[in-house]
Length: 204
Image 1 (cartoon, rainbow, N blue to C red):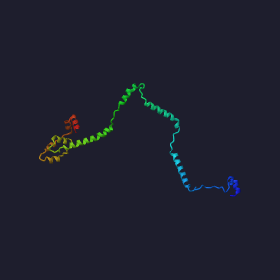
Image 2 (image 1 turned 30 degrees about the vertical axis):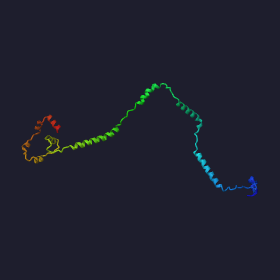
Image 3 (image 1 turned 135 degrees about the horizontal axis):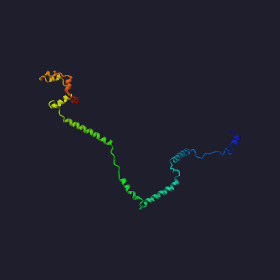
Image 4 (image 1 turned 180 degrees about the vertical axis):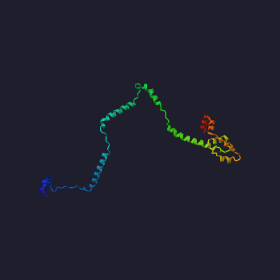
């Protein structure tokens, strides 16, 4: 840049003589690195202090006087021995004591009872079955009474036909004349009354 243009653009800079320029102090560059690092560390420390610093809430000091006075009054009231009884204290004392003594009775749920009783009932029934089955006697044909056999036959629990009877009782002769008797329907109806017919229907 020419001197005439510098005179117009920056007159103060133009007035400075070239001999009196900017000079660095002695040993400036020897400590420059330490100064830069210390400046960076100082800025980091200041930012950490700003982040973690303790701050009082808004309007804290506006109410601090009331809080301190209330605490002092409570402390002095607590330290004093109070011998006065409040009004109507004994009127409600009995009800208060009785309400504290009455404890609600514990209700036993049916679910919990059945939860314990069902396994016990099953175990008892299994025990009964096993004890009763051990004393069971074996049934033989000789141990059966004739009435039991008749009941078996009457209720149709034993199948009997003529061939099995003939093969079983071969030494007994069955008279065939008893089977040759023929009855007409009218004879049968005359033989049976209405009442006999009803009892016959009920039994069969």
